[in-house]
Image 1 (cartoon, helix red, strand yellow):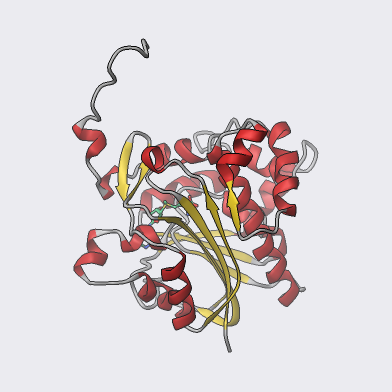
Image 2: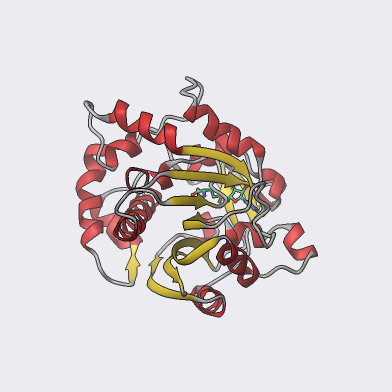
Length: 301
Ligand SMILES: C[S@@+](CC[C@H](N)C(=O)[O-])C[C@H]1O[C@@H](n2cnc3c(N)ncnc32)[C@H](O)[C@@H]1O
């Protein structure tokens, strides 16, 4: 491309923000490419695990380390899920905890730091196509997205990766849910020992259905609380100050949230916040958000 030429205006298709723009395949390829450079990322993940600041400028670290900010974001999420895994095993040393992942989408990386510490993961989403993607991986379908690099980032090596994949496959169950419903729309409502959600509640509250029914982020946090045991952990990750996020070259709507709203939603629904961190420095113009908020909370008894 000749960079001196005037750049074309954003096309109408790229401008349109629509829920219909979510494609499971485009989503995983946009955010979780199979071919990440594990050798390069492993020592950076080690450094990430030692950072204890609540506000972290990822654009600065990504530049210093020479990696994509999206890869760095994923390392912070893996590190965050590791902390959730540690909390769960502290309270359930028998490894009998039942975990629910709400709006898990077509991805399984969010389970990698947890599955060895627990009995089962109920992976849910409103879109059956997302669950089909996960089921393809669970059934070892050759067409499934390849998550091996993410296993390698979280303790696997060429010797044990087969066993690790087998263990995770045996622990995942998929089922539909709706985060907007008081019982999360689960076919068999029950209480879980821990619940995780990564980029789901903000997506759910950004939908037309949520707007039509006037459902707030706080309402959805209340719905999570209804399905969580007292003393159970909830890990919540959201993009900050965003109206949309990208899936491939298309835009999907999201509820515009920030640290204050999330803190209020958690506290007003009976959660104690154990840890809250914001990753700043995202490219809002390009990606739609200016940061990522990660919160680990405990449901008070
Ligand atoms: C940005 S994706 C996040 C996917 C995955 N958790 C991750 O870590 O990348 C948002 C997910 O929320 C799901 N979603 C949107 N509205 C929902 C709702 N009301 N209930 C459950 N899931 C919902 C979407 O289908 C999508 O899979």
